[in-house]
Length: 308
Image (tube, rainbow, N blue to C red; front, side, top):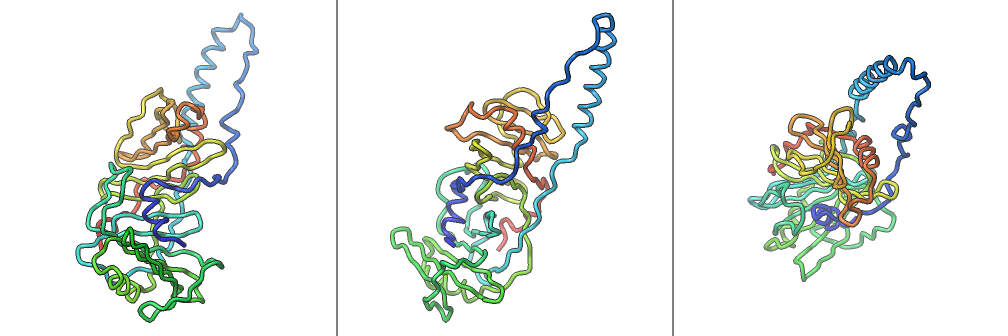
């Protein structure tokens, strides 16, 4: 487990490009019904077709969207943090790994790229891997210690309870007295029975959460569904996507070559957009299909943002 990759790189929009699981939605490709009545009753047929179309649309608008993803266990949490540090972001990986980042500055939704503000501290909890080598001694704890002098990064990975099988990694970067700080964090880490909600689940790769409790963004970048590479986001801000009206997730949305957007709840917007290299290459019905299969919680518990 590489905490620096899971936390920092995820928050820098570097999600893995692994194939996304799940079948294609065949219902989106149903053939249209042909006309079979004679011209003598064309007017009557026209009325019936319009009425049937309205009924079908209402049924579609009433279809419930997919349920939200189940919460994930936090696993472990630090009992001590440097002064002024608060939790600013989380990522959720397909294998159940939960990664968290603390710093002094919020990672606002508008900061969609660029470096994470230094200094920062991160922690990941996830399943044990057979290739892990835990043979270093650090602060009286056995694990794996590594350091990168150029970036001022120090990481320690350990297995607090072999019976549980959860691996914990803690990392500090550009933190004064980083090694001493990391040791205090490791020593203070304890089991945490809390769970964390996954507001958006679609495609593969880590899903990153950032912002404040009132102004936030959940994003999965460079995700793959079949041959489509896309970025999906759930945010409190309306995305700037132009196009034509379309029914998405049972309500009216907008679709165009730049993506699809739909308001899934008041002031909660879901968007699916092609990555820059695929602009105009993903059919509109494919964009709508991806939005339809996304598992969304428009009112997640993000009260942890900005807290220690």
